[in-house]
Amino acid sequence: MNTLKMRGTWNEVKGKLKQKYAALTDDDLTYLVGKEEELYGKLQQKLGKTKDEIKKLIASI
Image (cartoon, rainbow, N blue to C red; front, side, top):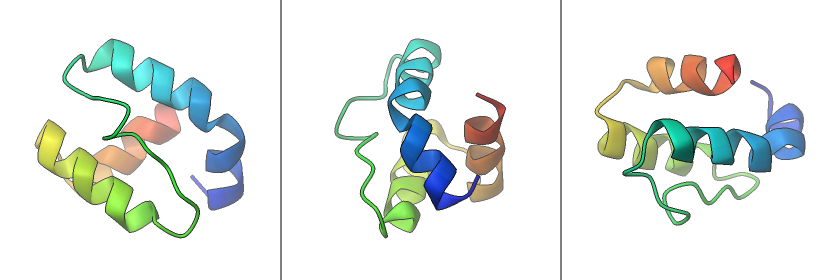
């Protein structure tokens, strides 16, 4: 998912991720422009998935 699209729908994506993975917090899902790699790293640690798996998960929402 490109940065512009991610920015535009992030609140929706964040809500769906929190529903699917109760262990995620608002801090885990804080999205800052230019800090996508940091977000992916947090999600990788929390969910135990690879970066590619995280990207596919976000894109599928």
